[in-house]
Length: 618
Image (cartoon, rainbow, N blue to C red; front, side, top):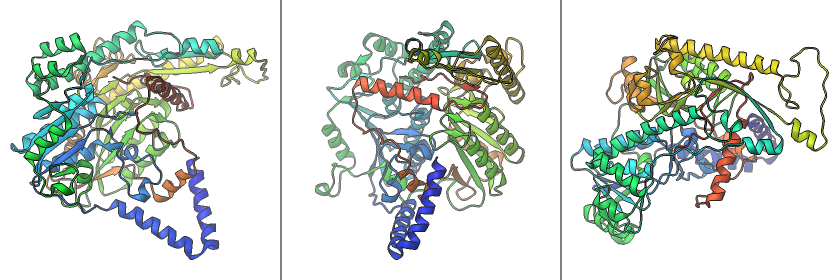
């Protein structure tokens, strides 16, 4: 559909050009020039002794595609997107700021706004490490954080600060981690929608929301173990930088959950209780504004968004105009068959990207940044095939983000080296199939079906009736075959025996593992983030480490002007406003998002390697 609108717009523009004459040409040139100007670095004033301000009220994504403004006109107006920002742009800005003599301190404020696959704990761990590096690179640079009602995510990052302020009327919202799953079986039964499933793997629970009304024992076992691993990383990280006894910290959380300011200060979770105005006054003493009456805040400052786009900042390796390129290809979102769109990983689209990278002589190595719960097994195999072909010619390194499970692991397994964070969700090596029918609801309203066919399975794809036992057996055999191939691939690529207590069949079973456990199981090679993967790719490609020895180029490329204008004609829904919604509405949109995922179940053989739908850790 997107391609149709692009073609339609191009043809419409041609007709209007013929009949509209110079006026249309003038408008097109103005729009194009405005669009081009947004790509250039802006000249931004930065005073010596300034504080770098990071408002955390954003969704931190991996792919620049996912961080683009939801407004189709944003690229034409030059407006900054204050909703989403890429992890690499943040960590790069922090690394530059740590070397920039004009930056005196870092100020953290606000609360993260996670959406889709962004702002997960693996992503925030990389961000947190970048903040710690900012402190350690220069001893005189300090980090300050102001919190009002911080969530676990907020405190995870803010705990890297030297000084943490908490509003006296705020609270620490840190009751622990939880996964709340939604089950649809009873609703489907009530409305007469039938569901049949096939699956392989004791822990492959992605189908369970449609077949049972609560967690299975295996799903609960897996989920509780995984949450325990992630929570352990959180406690270790935060208590380590705050110099707090982990046992006392856990006892306070178990006692209160929502910790009041006085108790937070007494436990050294925060340093000071202060209102926002008081914090601004303190920063004004650290970096006094040279012209107070002309600035909003009483200290010299620059937002991290402006600093990202500033032109005169320290240069880092990977910048410049070298003809030797390290390509970062972002695979973020659901894996779907076909071309897909900017919100998911289309098997055909990313296969084409990989072929282009293979042909590009300037590209010396490729880093795949995977942040995906999986999806279509057919599309995952198509992408993996191109990765293996690319790897024959060039090093391919995988950096796992928040998720690299099921199909996300499938596409990762044949790389030269896999990096993951301790709190990455990975593994989930399993396969399932799912079939719906509407016979009961249709019959209720007087609609019946009949068929004529030339073979026993000719109407297998119909949703007018449940599958017969013979058809289910056929589908199960297909899933079994695919699971066997999945195991063979992981066994071969990771050099893990197929059978035995330490064999891949024992490790797999559809089980999701934290990155720290995946390292012990040899599913990944090394703990580390995107920068560590880039450094390894540079080493593997035998490039230099100085500024100008190579440059980093990100893929997929940003949306073009024509594609942006085409979005205006695509009748997309308006994005939600930034205003907070009530809990009932929030649950409605959560359910809507879960059901929308079903639209992306488009594998041609009905086989999927995917995480469960509701893997949103709170």
